[in-house]
Structure formats: C-alpha cells, structure tokens
Image: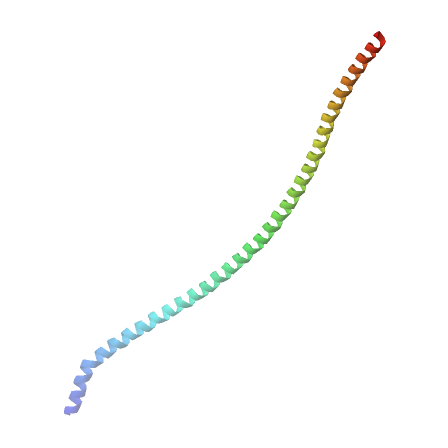
Amino acid sequence: METSKIVEGIKSVFLPEFNRIGSGLDKIEGRLDELSQRMGDLNQQQIYIGQRIDETNNRIDSVREELTQRIDSVREYLTQRIDDTNKRLDRLYEVVVRKDEHIGLKERVADLERKYEHLERQVSTG
C-alpha cells in the first residue's frame, strides 16, 4: 500500500503539471498551425506578386520596344524633312547667288552701255 500512496502522491503532484503542459502544447500546436497557414498564404502572395512583377516587366519591355520603334520612325521622318529643307535652302541659295550675279551683270552691262554711248559721242563729235 505504501507504493500506491507514493504513486498517488506523485500523480497528484505531476499529473496537474503534465495536464497544464499538455494544454500549453495544444495551444502551441494550434498557434503553429496558424503560423504555418499564414506562411503558406504569404508564399502564395509572394508567388502572385512575382507573377505580377514579371507581367509588368514584360509590359515595360513591350512599351520600350514600341517607343524605340516610334522614336526611330520620328527620327527617320525628321531626318528626311531636314534633308528636304537643306535641299530647298541649297536651291534658294543658288537662286540668290544667281540673282546677285544677274544684278551684277546687269549693272556691268548698263555701265558698258554708258561707256559705249560715251565713246559713240566722242567718235561722232570728233
């Protein structure tokens, strides 16, 4: 009987403590399950965000390509316009130079005509 009293004494001391530890472990396991679920949710969210980032990067690449093509097209257009304008300016310069030359020749002819008339008067009076 002594043994049963010792066993009962040990049970009375340790059993409530074991029950309390067991209850604490149940709470910890429940909390671990919650945290595990949250980690799973976070992983899923991270995967979703990664996919969104990839989609955004693809759209950025697409827009970059489109803008590069547009810029190249505008550059070609403007280069052609500049070349056309330069050709017109070259033609205008030629016209202006010819006009200046024409005016110079006209003045020279007028001067020569005056000299000729003067020489004719000298010859006729002479």
